[in-house]
Image 1: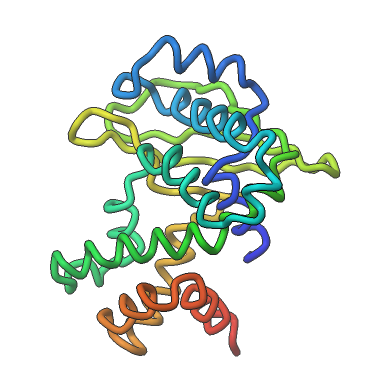
Image 2 (image 1 turned 120 degrees about the vertical axis):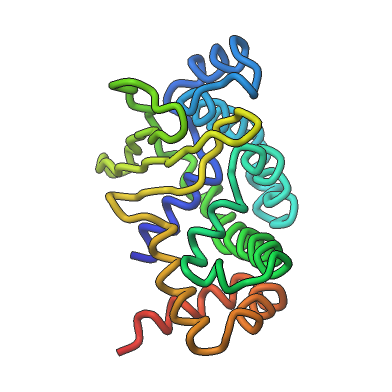
Amino acid sequence: MLRTLAFAMAIAFGTVAASPVLAQDAAAQAPASQQNPEQVVQEIAHQLDTTIAGHRDQLKNDKEKLISVIDDVFLPHFDIDYASILVLGRHAREATPEQRERFAKAFYNSITHRYAEGLLNYTKGAVQVLPFSGDLNDKRTVVRTQVVLDDGKKLSVDYAFRKSKDGDWKAYDVIIEGISYVTNYRNQVDAEIRKVGIEKLIANLENQGEKALEAMDKQSKAP
């Protein structure tokens, strides 16, 4: 599960699109506030492709620079607050507004630090945004993509979107081969909160970052 999730999170925070021309056209035709979810995914992929290309060696030796690239390109299209509420699950109602805000920031920072280098490792994989079928839901939808690995195997990676109050489409979940990253972390976060409490969990994420995530993952696999 961890290797699959790591690969998918690398994709979520950017990888090469199989159709950069479509991405360029989409970006040119529609302002960010008017882009549909499919165009958002294509644009993110294209922006990261052009940003990473020719700079891999530099970024490999400068993780903070790599993370800043992810922040600049991906963060505007991701609903961190909503995703963090889903990850907290029922504990979101128990948390104070300040705790929810701190958790959202600390969780996102921990995720990016844990998976950022995957962006450099998997840019050879081709990502194809599959044609959308059906009517676009006015509030929520899913963009389906297919990733072709170097060995020819194909991986299904889908992105769940919701429309913000401002009318922008933002991603809030990544589903890899049917497994939701929100659900995966919600189970781990729930177990950790039951063990140490929400304040201690937030403090661990703030102070330990990706190491706190790794510890939760190991604990979830312990017999």
